[in-house]
Length: 368
Image (cartoon, rainbow, N blue to C red; front, side, top):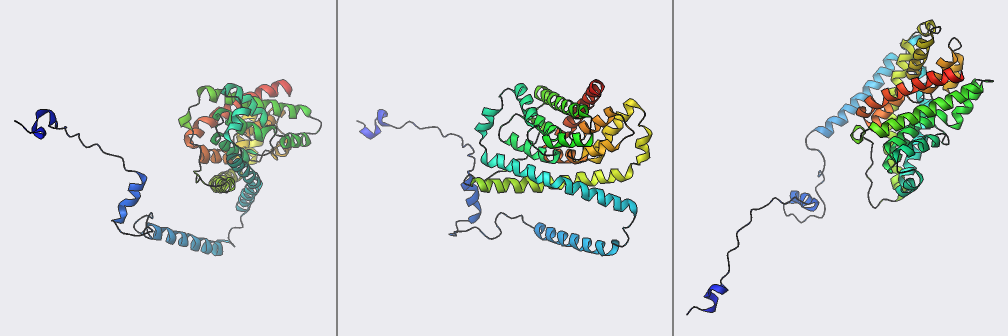
């Protein structure tokens, strides 16, 4: 008689072995792999740093760059007295100094939106429907003073907080073109011509809203690469504000310099006689002043005085200068590329340029 342990009912049925499935390593496992069981409370001094001579090479390259700057300044300072170079340096310095305060203002406002304004606020204020949010964002641009340099980081901050990209881009276009400072400056530059102020307001707001609606209908999320700053979950609001401002200022400031360099170069290269020669051609003059607005990259608070000085051109051509400039210029293109990527710029800039030109011709023909 079989013992109970040997009875068939008491025998264990062999369990087939399951094939070993790869288990994804956790963050803790990955951090512990390199310690080889050593009882150390801290990782090695070189842990997390790139191996090889990369860091040393970077330091030496930076040192060589500083030395070359010093040598170049000593060698070329007495030779760089050509009038064209002095004009280039003056224009570049003027563009940079003119735009930098507004860029800092925009970066600070964007950082404040990120740190202190909860996402739920924007969900309550701005309609969820993108088509309805676009005109609201366009009208909001009439309230906030600032130039195009400030509008880019602010629009990026709005997207970070969950605002629809179409609405944020509409604000990006309208804020530098129809804010109170710009409209007052336009009235001062064109005394006795209130129709110029009205035309600038209507054409700029109309172009911004139409671009926003088109982007809401046809725009794709993967065309944009908005800059994001990853914060420590335990960071205070002021730490988040400081991190966001430092990141955006360093990032956008470099592209502002690139745009300023390009604008200054083209200012010197393009002869003024070429511009005056086409002033009597109605359609061509509008296109020329639109192109000039892109190349000059003048801040929107000051562009009305430049437009008023172009007395050879028609009011419609001057309107194109005032509408195109705050929405499409070299420094703005550089800032947008640094913030949202070149894939975005290749699609967004041509759309904005076409819309601004259409509204300049249409509103100029009706009001001017």
